[in-house]
Amino acid sequence: MYMTPAEKENELRLLFEQWLNGAGDEQTLNRLSVYADDPDVQHTWQQLLDDAPAAPAAVLPRERQQQVIDTVYARLSSAIPALHYNKPVHRMRPWAKYAAAACLLVLTGALGYLFFREGGGPKETAPVAFNVVPGNTNKAVLTLANGATIVLDSAANGQLARQAGATVSKTEEGQVAYREADSWSIAGQADEYNTIQTPNGGEYKVMLSDGTAVWLNAASTITFPVAFTGSERRVSISGEAYFEVARNPRKPFKVEANGAVVEVLGTHFNVSAYPADAIHHATLLEGKIRLMKDAESVLLKPGQQARFGENAPAISVTTPENAEDAVAWKSGTFNFNNLDLATVMNQVSRWYNVDVRYEGGKPQASIVGVMNRSTDLATVLKSLELTSGVHFTLEKGPERGTIIVRQ
Image 1 (spheres, helix red, strand yellow):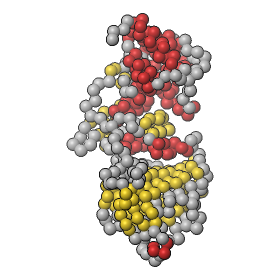
Image 2 (cartoon, helix red, strand yellow):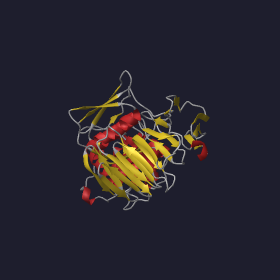
Image 3 (spheres, helix red, strand yellow):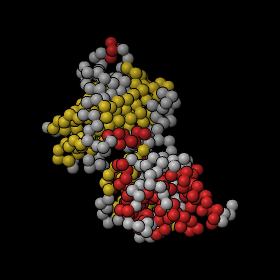
Image 4 (cartoon, helix red, strand yellow):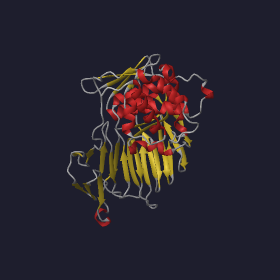
């Protein structure tokens, strides 16, 4: 339907007011995206930002996300003259630039409507010849002690196997659950070990025989005994896993991860130990854990994170602003909180099952931002490009795609 410039201006003002007051929804953002680069209303955007009230009614981004919004605003200001403020930045209403950047960040990052390059203006998004959209992510392969394998995402619900000391079932919720047999029936038996492995782009939850719940992130592996028959409960992982350990002070729970051991009594914690990552970390959310590596041993309190790895000569302990960031993946979110570009691209590579190639060296960029892991890859790369100044090209290969990273 044709609309005059005056009609467009009226609708834009109404939509912006709805967004500003927190009353907008996805439809509001979709309509705003239509006007994001409409030349008929560029002057209206400027007026709306200049005339914004001294304090917004909408909920502003959390303080720790303001860094990325500052960065986005600076890049938008240089790319889109129509969104420049004619007054010095330090004299602006302090929240107004966040309103402008946050609104357009949602439009460009979540909806993928515009594509920005450093030094140039906005351009309409070109058709994407190759893209990756996450599909069914609840997938993994179970390898039994006898070497038999079961593809869990295609296996039917119900009992999968009977092993010495436990039965293995797939629940209606799509997780694997081990149920330990009576203690008298497993006494004296040798431990049998199973392995669950998630592929790139997959996740899975397993309930161990002692009642411990484990969530595996993409490209991760856990090896564990079918039944815990000894004086301790010991498992090993590669990749990333979140644990909610069943309490049993008489039988401590231990996790082996890339040369380190996390000793647990009863707690919630996350361990990330991907071979491709230079630094690994264990993050404690609740309870108490001890991290041991070589001759070192550190005790963590809730909210603390221990970092270790080949590039870390010693275990270091920090207190992140929000320890929950470490398990954002479990809730379907990428949380890039001051991460270096290489670490971010490792996460992207594992989740979207693509390779990453750097041309001209690895850019020294720090990434801050939050995105849904259901977002398609092309949109994620556009958002990262907007906030970092690094350029990405997505190429299709014979088996899987490759992201080309250039400064």
